[in-house]
Length: 418
Image (cartoon, rainbow, N blue to C red):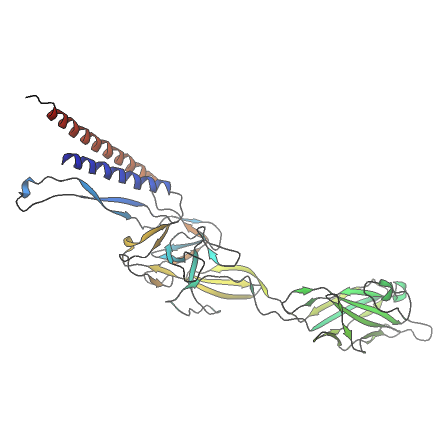
């Protein structure tokens, strides 16, 4: 029996060393919780044994307890690095599917993947309560993976362009590169068929910019009888020459005042129409160039920044002004956190002993507040662990000595001669 008693001490000391070694190895692991081996003594009894003469039969591991005290916080400056100040865990999904198993962690080093989902280094997806765009929480019982859209808004194609520019009389008398009047058939690849050209902004139905060019073909040059001049206007969008209405003419009188092109000119592009307004243009000896240009198309706004409030609401900003809420970080707690099962990566899963997760809003009663731009480090005290390691080593040596002593006693008995 004494052999088994000494052997149980050896096993217990070995377990203690293993747990301490694991704590030391994870002293730099974000969100890691240190553990300790807890032991219980063993007694064997029978109905006829005297309580006063009972001798223990060694020890056994009763459980590996986890220390869930909060670790120190380290500021990182990364807005998606999150930490909890107070009780609770972040809920994560351990797989890419919406129905993947739920995990619970305090390791809050999160970032966005290429699809906009917020994940940690283990590939687990942060979950949030759904919210409206103005930040109102829609549910505190259902969670979803947090996805931050990279763009926001509904794109609108360009239907009208306002353009004003200066035509230069010093450039071949306003004829520019055009060879003659009347010009040869318009060809955007042949500069001799038009006097001047300028780019204009045009967006397609997806909000993407497409190449567009306005061309001006001189149709009337100033002479001794008439000092006015006129240009017909051509429009090429994405390599297609648009069909212009007959009124697509820009003209000026002898004094340089604009007389034509004050009203919108319509150009047919398939089943769409693009109107071009040239009001405010002028003719002078200055070099050719655009004065002002605007268009009514809109593109989707790109993500400019992300902000996470203490109540866990995640705000995404697009452009200079538009901000929308994309979710509220869910915090989970349990009736018995010691019953949680570890699945690695400083992450736990619910079990029968822990009970079902209770979900709540960050900062409410029983749930910690969210701090953005900081991560929680391991709560392992390295000095304490080194002391525990020395104690476990001495316990192992003592149990080994007890085992050796039992062996010596057995040898003594076997060597008795009759």
